[in-house]
Image (cartoon, rainbow, N blue to C red; front, side, top):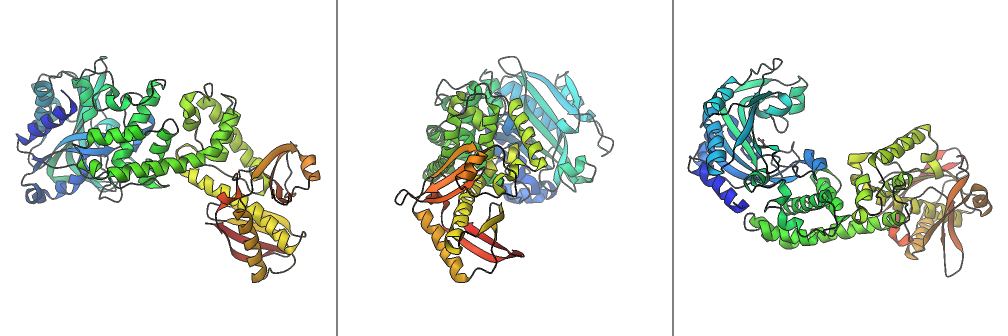
Amino acid sequence: MDSAALRKKFLDFFAARGHAAVPSSSLIPDDPSVLLTTAGMQQFKKYYTNPEMADRDFGSRNTVSIQKSFRTSDIDEVGDGRHLTFFEMMGNFSFGGYFKKEAITYAFDFLTKEMGLAISYVTIFQGKEGISVPKDEESARIWRSLGITDIREEGMDDVFWGPTGASGPCGPTTEIYCKNSAGEDIEVWNIVFNEFFCSGSREELLAGNATLEPLATKGIDTGMGLERLAMCVQGKNDIFETDLYAPLMDLVPSDFTDTQKRVIADHARAAVFLLADGVRPSNKDREYVLRRLLRRAIVMHDVRPLIERTIEQYGPTYPELVREKDSIVSAYSDEREKFMKTLRHGLKEMERMPSGDAKAAFHLYESFGLPYEVIKDYDGGKRAIHLTREQFDEEFKKHQEVSRAGSSAKFGGHGLYMKTGEVTIRDESEVEKVTRLHTATHLLHAGLRAVLGPEVRQDGSDITVERTRFDFRFPRKVTPEEIKKVEDWVNDAIRHDYQVKWEEMPCEEGIQKGALGFFREKYPPRVKIYTMHDPASGEIVSCEFCGGPHVQHTAEVGKFKIVKEEASSAGVRRIRAVVE
Ligand code: GLY
């Protein structure tokens, strides 16, 4: 049975039992407290507390749907053959139409009679005193009456659903496990008995900071992943062998590992569905989730063929993919281009990296925001064969210790601080911005000296994603005309697109070269010197001690603007500037 037949069987089975078929809602939920749609019940949440609205909206208190769903919680598990980010969630729902007996019997009949599967075992809620929810004896009785004897008791973590969002319906669940072709037990279906309304979020409930009130009308909410069902019915070992994924997997070159192939296929497919619902890659919330998926895939492979194949394959079921085809493909291409540009610097460094050198890998992370997985997977994993997560984390720890001690991170007067794991890619565009601001700061320093004279001495600097702040010794206020001249000088240097080069050398040699530094800091014995020089006149435009990173050509800095000039302390002026 192919996936199209499975979808149809499911919808027909429940339609024949009085359920109204409701189309999937968007992956962008109505509920602002939820990032993405994670389950079929989300679009039905309000009906559990207002069942009469279901009569009005669906002509029934029972519905069935196949919902586009996305779970960020599983993102790091993708690659193991069982976990996905995006998936299709089949579900039947009831808002007072029926309860445990019917819900369990429907699931039993659908799996054993329609799908021809054997149930390995089921789970039920073991009860929890603190929240006064008793053990689910009733479900156990119903399962036994259907001939299921392997009934396992589990707790809050596994068999108590919800609520989704800031508050909402929730309750104990019973899960059904079937075998895949390798004989492993796979959870295929989860049946939730919505008996309570929770006053707070799930986290608040688990922490004892929310209360449960019995719902006036008890409800049913179920979820069965189409991909897992297909794996069991089609006799496959993992979901990537099913007809939902095999055509995408075939488009990934065969020299990639299975894990890499799965990540590429999952991420490309998920990105298509997010793009079709209007999400665009950016640096926060769901936009960031999309960016992370795309960049993780792109660093391994140009996934455009998979993007196109997903649209072709899923278009008949999800017409929005066909409708949005052009915008999906162009958003992908834009993001790829942007990412490749950011990567260019990093990749150059990576090429020079001895494989397995954790120090070099950490340098890439620190300077270019390339996370461990990206470094590891770059070029099909050929570069960093021996690099391990442990070594990388070890470097990370060392760096944190050094930062805390306050030495290397402030090297050059403006250290670049990166954050840890999860937020890394989020910071990639920030790294790009900060990199541009670093170079702008060198040009500002040089411009101030060109306009105000060589007595200008750096007294400190601080760079954030928004702006650079530069302190320098100078005995008087800088006039608006002088500010304008400095600004023009810097923009002129940017327009000339000078090359930015660096060399490592002994500290003494840097000093002899006349490189500008911030000598309140103690420099290490070997230093990096960044220079920009004008090939036409042969003059040095800027030469400074600095840990970097910097752009490679000044034109990358963009438009430079001084936004404020003020006194910082006696004899010290402070300038704030931005790049656009
Ligand atoms: N809402 C039930 C589930 O997603 O498992």
